[in-house]
Length: 242
Image (cartoon, rainbow, N blue to C red):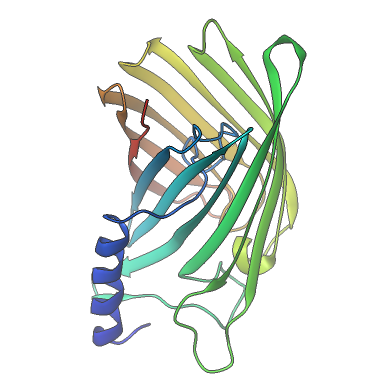
């Protein structure tokens, strides 16, 4: 665990990051959607999962044009209310390292009949490491996407590979899938995703996405771990500029 001084520093750093321009990959809940941000536009996504501790995942996307995006994200910022501390893990891969500061990139390749492939990767380090414990962390994926009925429905399926320090103990290669269904298009959507594997990242998530405006959807969902069956509440807010 981190001491109180470090906890306060990270808390205010997160607030600062949430109000400045940074970069990364947008997801349904946990699986990348493999849709790049619009050229010279910034997309921001903030997710909290709530169980016996609170986990924050902050995501930003910036479109470079020509179906490219680059980015960075702050992952696995885990706050334990009982001890009033943020967990710092950089010594055991039984669970994913935390917190993590990642850089990423993604390229879309368009195919006939409305299909496209998204190739992406995230690479970074554990934040605030103990002495000599800064370690490289990585995750990569290849997703096949298909949109239906004027983008009202979307399906994603693909393969991932990640380092144990990113995933936690368990298989390092697996399957991931996600979907979005516009029940009332850009008003109320059903979304969900699943990542295979008996590790920290392996989980099922389902929820509803309510559009506060055309550019600001709020998603609320339920998440279940593959590893031990524990559940969590997910709250996710996204800003997607026109």
